[in-house]
Image 1 (tube, rainbow, N blue to C red):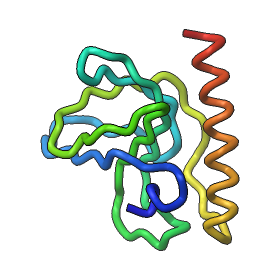
Image 2 (cartoon, rainbow, N blue to C red):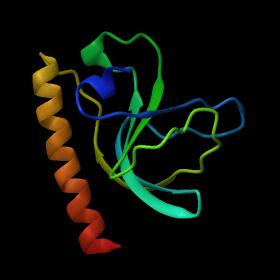
Image 3 (spheres, helix red, strand yellow):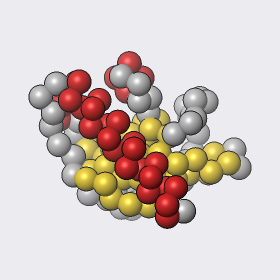
Image 4 (tube, helix red, strand yellow):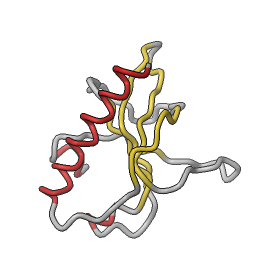
Length: 113
C-alpha cells in the first residue's frame, strides 16, 4: 500500500494461471474496462527495487479512478511501453519519475486514442 501513501494508489494484480504470458519488467500505459467504463493508467511489472522488493509484482495506477477493485477480475490492455524498471535513490525521486510518467501517459492517450 505504498502507492496510496505517495499519491499513486494501485490495483495489485495476481496472475494465477501459469499459461498466461507476463510482459517484460517495466512501466506501461494501459487501459481496462471496469463496470462498463474504460479507464487508462500506468502499470509497473517488476520487483520494486526502490522498495527493496524481492519478488515480481504487477501494479496498476488508474487515472481518475478511486473505487474498490479488491477481488475483481480485470482485463488489462497494454497500449505502450514507457520505460524499463529502475531503482531510485529515494522515494521522492520515484514520485518525481511517476509524475513524469503520468504526464507522458496522459499526453499519449490524448494524442493517440
